[in-house]
Length: 146
Image (cartoon, rainbow, N blue to C red; front, top):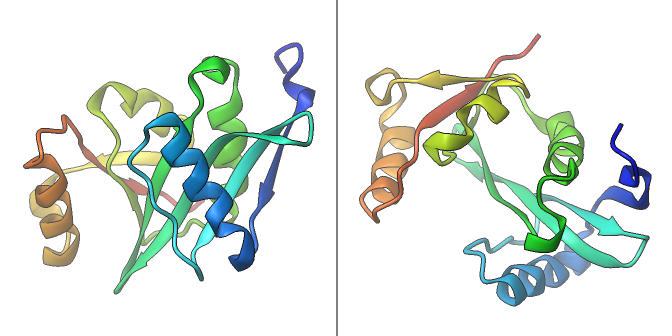
């Protein structure tokens, strides 16, 4: 464990706390927008400041890990891994993520594998293409249940 990582605590937000996640995204200029009734997790620094956020969006027959973001001052310190470890409690074989291509090794280390866009349902493929067509260099990854 990296020195000082114990100062970071991951926790689930209640539906009433979801606005805290969205304030985090706005404050740091991230695109995420969590909704009530989604599994939303955050990492707090020294039990107060939100420094990371992510959520799992139900999308019909699958789940999409979305909005994974870490405040710039806390990046490269193991915070994202801590956040995703908590979120992974809700992952199953129908959980996908569309990370930037350069993050594929990080997500592989968490149990995801690269999927060809032709090998997913139309529903997953359409959502992926919509994001990709916005100019994002992203890939599709699916979670492998152990």
